[in-house]
Length: 568
Image 1 (cartoon, rainbow, N blue to C red):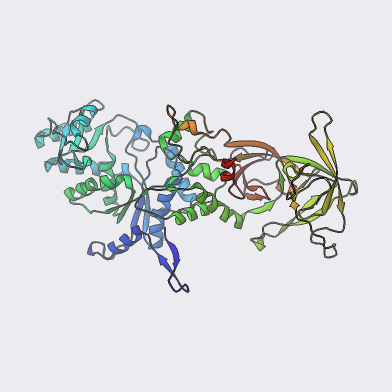
Image 2 (spheres, rainbow, N blue to C red):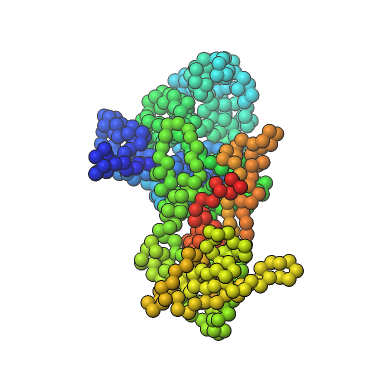
């Protein structure tokens, strides 16, 4: 959407508007829109789940209306009943609400089927539409190419009366599916192929999720879209760039019907690195079992991102950050991940969790003693308060926080080395216990310095270079942790090796599952976002987690580690 930029003097801030806002502001000065408020719409087809690209369009359309005191409708383009389901209608509404927007009116293209049919008859009577008996394949042949003009259908010169009767027969169910179409009579030699007598209606017997079996003819998108905008008095029809070539047809229909004419403006859709946006390919991932469903946390669907733990605030911030453009480009997925990190850093409480445990025994700590250590919930939010974490003789630390043959700049635990335990004491590694056969490190025997407790005013002011997190072995709770990574290995997964398709670029390590040990403050948690200290941001899985079996999804690591991984 919009963003703030400093003026040349560097003292004041002014608002910079994107090119769509500039056009809208100019249009509102026209006599045609005198006294009118901005009116936009978000018009998804209910044939699948929304993805991050739709989030950009949602933020743009609803954001324009919100910013300029206007309205935005949610309108379902339900003109293709064979692919549409109520399930998708419900999920789309949930996604829009979750992103933080509320539509002015809920509409459906099917609300206007009767009016669209009346307008089709109006064009027939004006000699601007005709019934055509060409098959779909013949229609494509007659249309011509980008370099060669099309040729007229042999049915183009039917009389008005004949066209009226044939269209009535189509509507009455007297024609077989695909046998006839109603086409606009424009120009088969037009340089824009969309103007070469486009199809307005086709015969299709398919049960509609709202109108049932009332209709056996259904309008094409281009015929329904502009007229639906007109009926709803939309001021600006904001579309992605692939509809730029359709704009002359959008205009032709409104002008030749003599109805209110909204303005269409196009912008570049979102392309994201390491991500597939095609609904067809996303459906293939689901149907072939490469992911667990539309809400798989690795999917770019809004429901998948919601389940993974992305927040609506972070998605809106991302859409605001990338803005809108007139030309296609690819946004690095790290921009999205950083938007998520920035918001979670502000709102996520910190907790300690060990994902790959190594046992530590404090040999000089009293056998049955348990202390409660004060831990800050969120250093970015004083109102989040603090909690108490139990500390005992036997602890668990991350296995990566110990190295037996450590390099000079390794500041975590090593034989003879010291570290500070987060919120706790300084400890020293005195002995390494190994499996006599495999040589695997089984536990560390350490000593603690009782005069170095964190937060104690009387503590000895000793400093060590490393601080690591831990959990008390006796108090830790187990949880399944799913560490998600990018679903594809390459920046542009659409480009596959020769002889392969996009599935060849799937990342075989896009999910790793581990049993983690968490501090007991998470025992009763049912939902929420957390920072597992020194590890990453995690959330409770909304589908699989139960009181008996906690499941956490990794949202993003604390920092981008992908580039370093690719260098190895």
